[in-house]
Length: 143
Ligand code: TYD
Image (cartoon, rainbow, N blue to C red; front, side):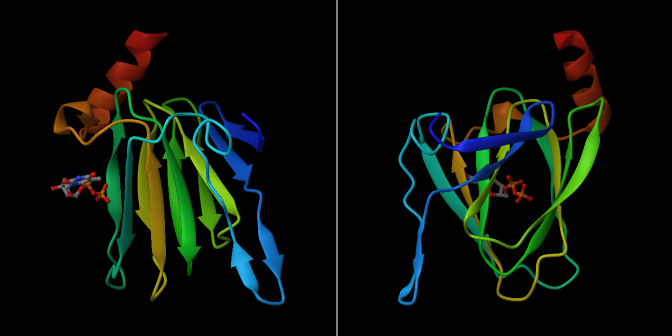
C-alpha cells in the first residue's frame, strides 16, 4: 500500500490519493495494488440520486471497496458492528476504504454528485448482507 491510510474505525480508513492539482485542473491516477490496497475487479459509479434518497443499507461478506466522491458531496455512515461513524466525502483526492463486514449507508447526496466505487470482487448478490441483524451475527461469528 503506497498511499496514506488513516484508520477511522476498524476496517474503515480514509486515504489521501496522490494527485496532480494545478492551474489546469485536477488529475488523480489510481493503480491497483499501488493506490488501492487490492486488485480492482469492478468499477461502478452512482449518480443522479434524487434529493432525499438514501442508498446502501448493507454489508458485504468478502468485498472490499474504495469510495471516491468525484463530484459534489455525500455522507457515508460506516458501522463495523462495534463502532460507527459518519464520513463526509466532498474531495476527489480522498478515498474511503471500506473493508468486508462493514455496514454502510449513503446519505445526503448533493445535486450533481458522483460517487465512484472501486471493488475487489465482481458483482454477486451472494456477497451481500442486507439485514442488519444478520450483519451483527456475521460480525460476532468472526470474533
Ligand atoms: P445496490 O448495491 O443494492 O445499490 P446501493 O447499495 O447503492 O443502494 O445495487 C443496486 C442494484 O444494482 C441491484 O439491483 C444490484 C445492481 N448492481 C449490479 O448489477 N452490479 C453492481 O456492480 C452493483 C454495485 C449493483
